[in-house]
Image 1 (cartoon, rainbow, N blue to C red):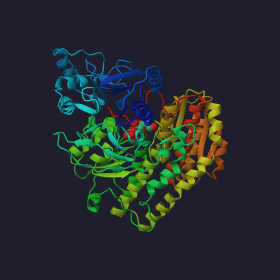
Image 2 (image 1 turned 180 degrees about the vertical axis):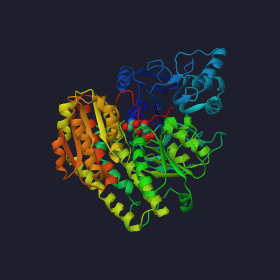
Image 3 (image 1 turned 135 degrees about the vertical axis):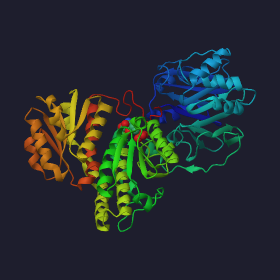
Image 4 (image 1 turned 180 degrees about the horizontal axis):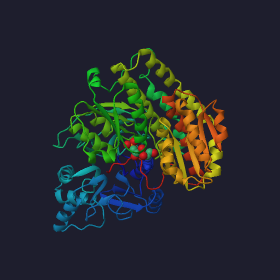
Length: 608
Ligand code: AGP
């Protein structure tokens, strides 16, 4: 998704903008550009491709100046090209704009502007913005931007500079993230905190329709009517290191290794032995929990896969029926909801457009919403009634890993919290699960030390075009995530199946050498799983299994096995997903893929 950076200060804007954009690369992009004002002259450099292309151009023709805006674009309207790259400018070249989001009524605005003589050079929706500002500009850029946004429908975070008021930067957001970094005599704006972390830890998290006006005189925050507003400064506690690769070859590998800490952090102060579970930002009452008729868990991608585990554990522990939905499908199926229905949305970014639509639909039907998200101040956290933050820290790699395991922890916490309130489990049963959860970080460390079998397996199989992931119960949930990870970063096609379902169709695909990754971590159904593995092995499939330590009998039926530490059955997904993440990672490395930035994917998908 697009990334925005802006700077007003005394330093050269160019290098600060590029550095900030680099920190936002994880959002995915296809082109980049900057607009900088120097001595009252506005200059724009932009091009298709990676940031390195832009840097090369800036090296050849440097742009001087202390005020500027920068952008990385992820194409929605119009192909990736130099013309479609941001910043966009008015015809006179005096106003420049960067935009993240989609202007839904851009065709109408474009026609309206063209009828007034405005000429367009790009295919983007965004280009209407500088022309609209130009139309309304009457010597006051703030006033012109305010009038412009009243005409815009859709989602946007925009930043605007003009050579007519050369020390000023104006920015505003609606349904797209935007933060303001507060330095000493210098200010930043950005789509996300990592872009400013090298310079400041003090930020404002802008809400919808809030404007920021930055100039050499300082900073002003305004509401949509132009009235000054006061905001609390948010102090970022992440260390700068946490947003860097920290010695690992890729962010993804670093983030896989951060999982024991992420699991521990997410449990901190929530899972305390001998004490009832209390959740700071969750205010749903005991009576409301008792009266719940149904829970919908709604999410996309990896977050959805965490929801598969959520459904299983909430139903099992709290005895509340749970329906699971892919967010992009949810609103088109007229779901049955009322004030006694709860929605749990799961979203790493808290900005995913499909998930936000589902959340808004639930609220419009009077249902309560709990957001499980990793991003403080994200749209999901602001719009939901209750929030459970996953404390995974910033996740940079496009493929989600540590966010997923913390989403699983969040599902266990919510399930236990409901079970405690509904008294579906005894105090002793809850304590037993809590003890088992507290052992998870250590068990995760153990798995991370044992990578060799996975590495050897990938070296022998990376050239295959198709693979299957199978499992039963919670193992099937993990199979879904293992399969998604493999597809995302190694581009190997794979499908995940409940093992018992194979004989109803997919077994027809088994032949000599077919690669099957089988999860057999659930003690209660281990023997059933082994039977399914045998059915495949006799048809020539090469089965790579994951089984709990001690179950050596599985070796007779499989090509290779990795043993994973024994944990309580319901908690196994937290541990068994780790070797699958490593499997996807090493497959991608063997194939020479760009692990952290897989093709066609964006970290945060803020369009439906
Ligand atoms: C994860 O590896 C994916 N890149 C993707 O499926 C992601 O989980 C999905 O887009 C949802 O994102 P969110 O958690 O930020 O809402």
